[in-house]
Amino acid sequence: MNTSDILMDVHNHSDLSPDGTNKPEDMVKRAIELGISYYSLTDHLEINKFYDEEYLYEEPVRKASEISPLLIDRYSDKINMAYGVELGQPLQDMKLTERMLSSYKYDFIIGSLHMCNGWDDFYLLDYSKVSPDSLLKLYFEELLDMARWGEFDVLGHLTYPLRYIVGDSGLYIDMSRYLPIIKEIFATLIKNDIGIEINSSGLRQKIGLTLPDEYYVRLYKELGGKILTVGSDAHCTEDLGKGIPEAIALARNVGFTELAFFKKRNPTFISII
Image (cartoon, rainbow, N blue to C red):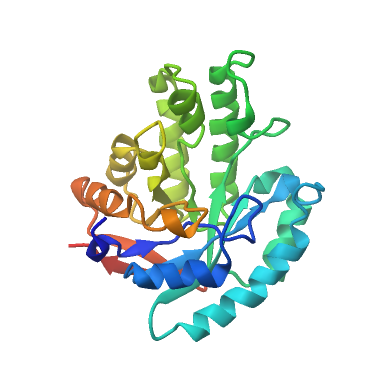
């Protein structure tokens, strides 16, 4: 990995996420070692799992609100860091979502959908027993509702389910049937000044593609999209920055000249040419 090409990594997780490994400060120190200039920890806040005994998000979310500002200040001379969150399934309990967003002053919010309403996470499902196409229809419909709601800054990993349906399970999906609703999602995001991310995690997983891949990033650009971020979706220090050079090259290839970095929910545009 050429560290000079790791300009930005604004989607990753510490041990304040249920599936994270390393402490927040260790993640920041590793980002500095890699030469990342623009960085955000975005620990999980899964709204529909908030009270589940397996997750119990109240305390880690509170800790993140204390730790992130301290780290931002402590390392301000070494890295540009934002206080972020990955907000999962925000529409599945709007009262709780509104409480969380009014209680914490995030710099940057990734809006994600890891599981359709009433279903388990896509990575837990057995696709020999459920219909991928039925789930994908529900998935994109809920993403469209999220885009219309619009209280986030970028949409996380548009093609997240394909990581498991195609990558892990090896199934073929005719994505052309979802193109109309994906276009509507993009148009709605653009209207609401919301961006998308290139999530590089797929490059180190079986699917072997960014999430979304070049086709959809190009489509977003052609429809008028201007707000783009890149993130490794690392859950440990070892994966920080992985795939970011390829993600930035993809962004350039489809015509982007800038990436967005958020502070106080406002983007600053960083040149990539």
